[in-house]
Image 1 (cartoon, rainbow, N blue to C red):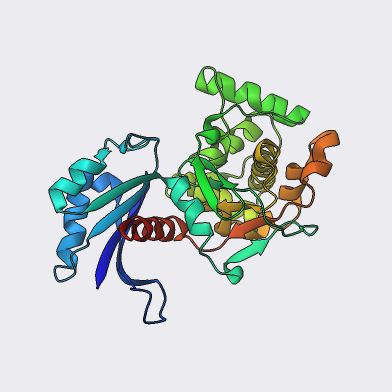
Image 2 (image 1 turned 60 degrees about the horizontal axis):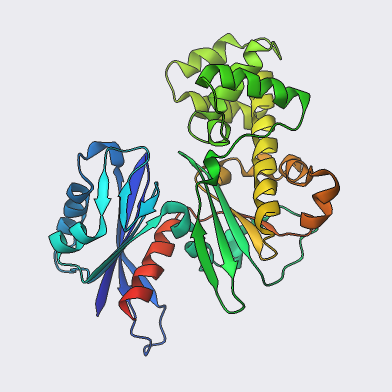
Length: 336
């Protein structure tokens, strides 16, 4: 029996999973989950401390190899985590824990591999005119950050290319969005990326813009809730319920811009195999994504709308896609 360690390392939380890799002869699933645990990332000074704590929970099942999807760029199998004070090095981890192999992936790279192993019922199709076919695919994922990755199709398999596309420029597509860009440029002192709107405090930034532009009068009860709860969660909750005009417009604008950025990604790589929507925010706002506003933003590309109008746009309902992708990569590398 071969045990493998996989991880989804995010700015807010880290999920680690221990998997049993099947030898291919038993007819069972290639990977069987043995143990999973979730940790607050900010609660650990070093990533190795977190790994040590997890391994202490499974003392009888020592992993032979590991793969971690990390929120940050990977260079020479080393990562300075984007929203954490961690420096993660594959060679150091392998030496410290006695793993035969350690692989570091960008978190969206891991998520992209994971999408390839999800079942059809773990997706919701957002494009009513989708036509499924073989070809390139892509992933866009709003969560603590905004991640994007491309799955290049070589005729036999997909090869994942990580990107930092979530940090590229926000491109307004209406007079309202023009004003939003000016508001955020002043707030952040210059460059405004898609991540400023579609991740982290994105709901709060949109709400502040709409409040400042007098879109509607703020509700004192809603704003009182923001003092005691996560502000973005309060805005999202009222936006989905339609119980506050400012929050409702915040949600509509968020969804439209999310769709617009997904459409930008589609134009850049023509993913006939589909655009996958990952990340933690998507499933939570599924109802808003299914209203059609997302697809309006996606297709608002002028004369080039026809180039992407039939691309499948699939919302992933499985939050463990990055963990699953890392586990499959660990297994693939171990069996080489």
